[in-house]
Length: 449
Image (cartoon, rainbow, N blue to C red; front, side, top):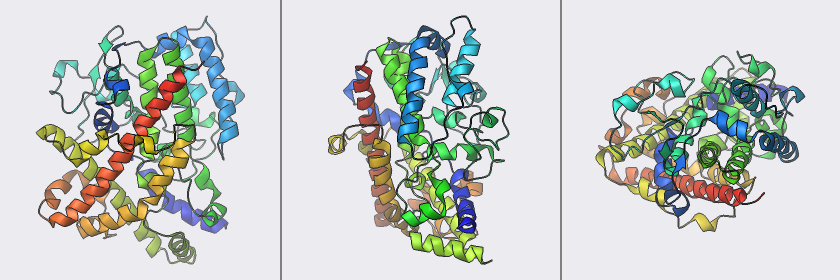
């Protein structure tokens, strides 16, 4: 069993290497919420720095963070308790900087997280004035990637901004370094005191892979997989969703709507990640029996099939993400709506799901996403150029910047592309429906003491 777990861990290394589920969540979030009355018609809010919220509600935050810890120990299958030294305690005599640090460390997020005052503009809006833009490093602790389409517009305390812009912008923020290097074997000082233990899968030397266990949730695998590799349960999107959503409710209740919307957006990121089948399944398109067989061969000294599976899963994940991002961004630039925008905005299915709860992301979102894995994989394999999704000698991640999937598919069979567009639209429809249901849940909780 131990050798099988080691072999399976190497498969999971690919997941850590592709820790992004959807490129730039804000693009899809604008479409998701632009017609939702609770967001689109909400009153503008006054911008305030995090330090102001923490100082004004310090005692309430102390109580809330204690209750969050109790919830986590009660509801999460695998949860390393927060070390006592990290408990957030009200102390009105300390500096704003010290209070902020104590808060971030009590949440067990990266204490160098920026949490800057900014918005990402709607890509359908006019391009922002260059004078208003913030440098990438002012918002994100991770390196800027080639051909980035991110634009960060600076805002300041006292400004009036729309809840839609705050919410949509924040949905992408957890990918800006909040969950980086939180492990005992991470090259960071904070990882050694946070108590999460060693990185359960992936390479601790690869900075981006360390966020993966917070952005993925393998809740619906076969029992034999859990028995052989119990470490796959060591994932924490439910923790982050509960932390940020309850902070959002507190902020709304206590007269800090800017942080109510901002924390809601942070929580939404993890829900939206779980709508991506490659974040909710170990190996979409491969049965547990096949996964076990491939790993047994690797253990016997025949790793070829395992190595090829890792490359193919990675390529398919990245190709889906690339295609979805191109569709949304191209539509915005051309001001031409597609089935993707319609699916994101369509609220017809929202009420068909259960009411929001603390475990909705596991029981509804991840379950649905996991079940879509095989159909999605079949569609990708049957539609995209074979070299990208069926050739283990090709590394999509290395070549991605030079690939235009939309242009390539426009030259291929229209019926095949229509099938890929349908499944992509279905995934985006799930993204939209579950996002709106979470917002409804947060707003309902914000009215409850």
